[in-house]
Length: 346
Image (tube, rainbow, N blue to C red):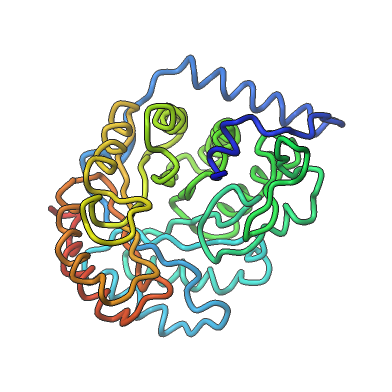
């Protein structure tokens, strides 16, 4: 059973909400949902101006050499990168505070806007590295349950119920800390993992906007989980979150007719479907070209098809800066930079 199926089939929940914190969280979810339904989508900042975003996941963890980070940012700037997205695990708030501060400061020094990617929080978002959520493992009362009453688990451990008040409180507190501890100017919700998490991400996005009104907020979905009519309807509920500026999906930069992994691909209609979904909900469109875990035998395909992804003309295009677990990563970066260079100015 897929992650999104788990959410859409109404998994059994620990439904007893106790204490003042539970009441506050429940009211916040209800009020936010009501307000979003009543308010029309407003024009979002950045629309009409393309953005090139570098996905910079768990760089140099945990040994950070500032001059290497500086060189990374200079390289990104040299190809016209306008934003860099840095992953933040919940444990990074304390154990990697200065590591992230170095990356944020070097991005600003290079003229690139730093974005944060909340990673693995509650096992309800992706990001990197791929590890269990400390919060979730320490709070079994929040665990998502399967229909048979047993906890849902995968390779990253358990998952927290997005409607549980403790989960909501965890997201709100961490979002506030994220935006006050470092000088991030953007935030990306990377692949929400439950279809019933819309209210959680609505509340967390509203909270982020209240803390930093000029923040750029992006969300993208796991394309593989949103094919077909019913799945598209589920994705659209996330696209309707009012506070978001950008919305989209990620996928391999090739098509269904190409001889490679077909789990999720941006060409052949899926990428365009999410671009259209973003536009009809008043959002800028976002695409992330997934190029991690590739053998060099796939590079000619990336070289041939990535230009077609670029030609889709989304408002915010994201690329991986030295994606994990790739053979001959320098060659892959040469191919990537050749095709995305100066995208924001096209």
